[in-house]
Image (tube, rainbow, N blue to C red):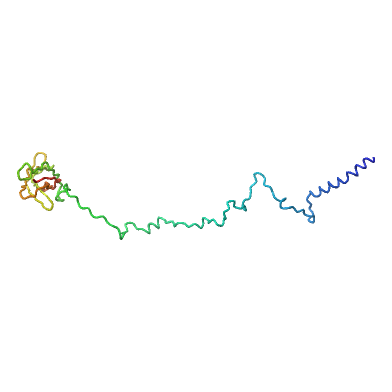
Length: 218
């Protein structure tokens, strides 16, 4: 009996200490109860894995001052011109004060396929022979017109620089063409060298000139 009483007396202080510790762990509803302060180190909350981290107040780690970096809003921008503005600024076909217009191109010499008289149909005239050796002291040129008709006139023209000489002879129709044959011009008094020879043809319905060929007077 005395032994049990001694154990109960020895356990009493331990029971009282346990109750006191439990009373401090349970929050009190009494507003007048003392508040236990904690240090900043104890209040630091360790983020758990997967929890979002607030980086709004984080300090830049590259050493660059954010205020020193210009914003994209302050960068100069080039003006944008719409199609309507461009159309209003430059009118099509507007005369330019310093523009150089191309010179008119004159018809090339030797373009003899064009009819001599535009009011008449074109005659296709061809040279078949041109020589200064067949007839002594003369230029002999023959040709034909691809159409067959009566009443036409053939002409032989020799040209050298500003000097132009022409003779005429009647044309003769055959079965398939109109012939300008045996056109002969004397070379007496003509300068030696190359001359340009053409045959012309004229009739009441047609007109044309052949391409030029070169004859050499020796």
